Length: 328
Image (cartoon, rainbow, N blue to C red):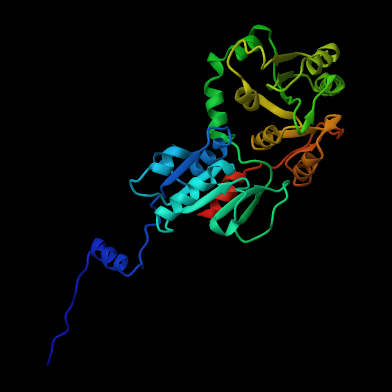
């Protein structure tokens, strides 16, 4: 009578055999990612999404031309933003024999079926298909890690040094002001209206307004603001730039954020900071930005600037985290 044969396998031997038949996968293995850039600020979106998918040590950033010519292996994912990187992403996928999943942020202006994922903001028109993931606003870099770093940078910040010297105290309201471009403009009367609201809120409960302008903010908007503001405040003028931009520090310090609705980026960042947010509608506001503004308010991520309540709460926007979980 034949005796049964007993085979004893170690974990590593079992893993090897299962891998041969495609039945084993390392759940703890983090994917490798190439981030392809066209040299614009849009790379911030691609990098933030990549960092939510994998560890930073597994991310390599390439200029689009360098990625075209890179021939050593291929990644699990290639991510890029704006249509200028679309051809590069398609080239990476082709060289990998289709093994690299490509993620295009913003419309590639090419056939959607050639991409694994296309990430488009909900306020822009697009053809609905299985590859499109819609975002509320823009993927952005504001998260707990960034705000914690801002906290650590407080002591060496000249803006914070000024606040202490002038004895400007909490609670702080951060005011992010945009300016003239396709999305609208913040004009002198808008600056006056912002100041009037701050006079009312801070006049009732105390505190300080922290104002941050952008490269698009016009002098007239600040002039109107300065003429009306009566409560304690500090203005960082982007065009003068006496010291490092305290934008992240303002978001860290703020109990509440007021942001002008002409800037998709600033609205998205404000709503990602985990603070109370009011969105101000400037008199000149591009029609294409109104849907996003209203979506943020409807979703509970912000309230309208004109809302009379001083006590309210907002949900936190985290599109990078949400989309990363969908992709992985």
